[in-house]
Image (tube, rainbow, N blue to C red; front, side):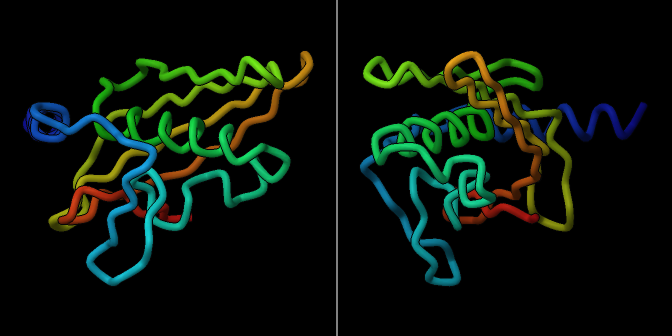
Length: 136
């Protein structure tokens, strides 16, 4: 029961007062790496999931990853859609947990394209500067 309380505290700390993601803002992580939409290393899209996405689709997808990690409760989907191509995606973050001094969250990103869906899972940890680093 104590661990459940500790985890709920992580979710509360991470989600209260969290800034909205801005796809045009690209902060640097504490180690100097550039982040896109607050995801250092460009999130799960760099795993090959988003290799065929346009630039605007990648920004929308990364923005959805950031919002899911930073502002949504576990299991609450963040949906993005590109009207031009018809592609869409859904990002769902799981319950956060703490590793040392960092809050981490597993998440799934699914992309729909012409009736075909593909998905990938990963885990990201929140840096002091508010960016997230993919662990995989």
